[in-house]
Length: 92
Image (tube, one colour):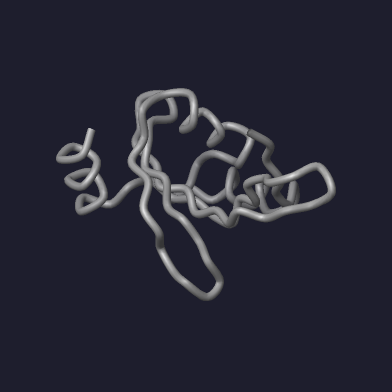
């Protein structure tokens, strides 16, 4: 699985106290079981809810293609809401 993201946006997310991590750390979501659903149709975006360290996060991404094939373009992330925690608990 390949990933792509804006490094400047990642740094802004890391500095935001409500986020606390950047995309580099958020990739850990895909190392453990996670919940996946489709967030929107236009543009087609997906939400992965999973663990990064001791905290549950939601990560929004798009599946894009280039000459090498598909890759995940990371859009944004945040600490999981109570509703997202409930969804994760019920589906994992």
